[in-house]
Length: 412
Ligand SMILES: Nc1nc2c(c(=O)[nH]1)N[C@H]1C(S)=C(S)[C@@H](COP(=O)(O)OP(=O)(O)OC[C@H]3O[C@@H](n4cnc5c(N)ncnc54)[C@H](O)[C@@H]3O)O[C@H]1N2
Ligand code: MOO
Image (cartoon, rainbow, N blue to C red):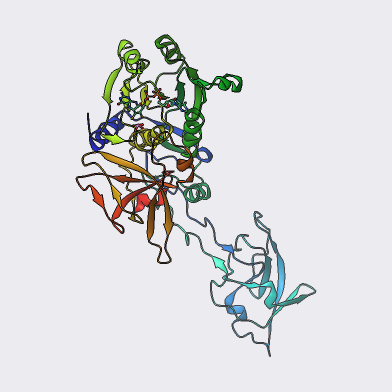
């Protein structure tokens, strides 16, 4: 049986099989850039007004005061998005201008409308602006050629905004294969009538995996529920396109119906690992199919399936997008924990912030892997590894929020 770290190494080494695709910018949030992008233009790309008011020449108003306002003829109006026809000689003149409108040639300041009076096309300003006042200069935000997206950087809504402003319409990102969920088990039923005989259960894992994948931005689909019958799994695999990630639950431990591994082996899949020294989720299986799809056989117990998704499936998606191994947050235990050495323990936990912004973690009651109520109360997992068997209150531990969507941490 391999350790969690060995399993993680195998998952991360599969990153060598990554591919890229070019997407419309609007579809790239959460995706990882495969290539750096430098801004094709300055931002702003032309001098423009920061205020609704009047564009003036600073020299024409420099002696203005409340006692002796400067008087200027108003030569026209410039609105955002327009290119006005203005007289060539603008000395001693002002132009009415709106926020975002281009500064007409020769003007070097904008006086906000609130600071002036006007009548009969004549402006009176008691205020003498500084040169460049209320003008947003070309390139003041960003000079053309500045890197706006690094390779391997996760695209946030804010980075997307910057790319949009710079006129970047398409981005090459790492491919994120579609995830297909299969729920296995004769006891897993789609019909509530079948539950009356007290042998059946509803499918909790299928809906969970689809929701958890969607939360991470992974495209996903339910491939269906099947019985503990090898033929049904074989048939289901035929329906899933090559190059996908398939996640099944159930049928991977030691029971008479634990058929998943056998089906994969007969189909020529390479079993990359089966069973890891972890709790919960020990029977986890990871394989590569002949058609290039990856297959995760997660255990059927719901909390074990959740751990399998968070700590096995998500790391593969990181590897396929050339992201490094996820770095955990660090929190302090609010209660002591005992554990077996050499077994990576994942605990459902509730994380809170103290007044100094320190993280404190409470391992929740109900750690058994069939218990869903405690999972629903958790907001994180604690991951415990190493030899230490008794962890006292205040011990620092690794904390993984239930969702891995913390792209800002990649910067640290
Ligand atoms: N003799 C042994 N027995 C078991 C071992 C072992 O090593 N030796 N491992 C235990 C551990 S740990 C786990 S975890 C489970 C995993 O078993 P399987 O992956 O084969 O899953 P099943 O036996 O099919 O189901 C386990 C449990 O989960 C329930 N289940 C299954 N599918 C769903 C679903 N879609 N939604 C909700 N609940 C589901 C199922 O009814 C079972 O109660 O094996 C232990 N046994
Ligand atoms: O790995 Mo199992 O999840 O402990 O029941």
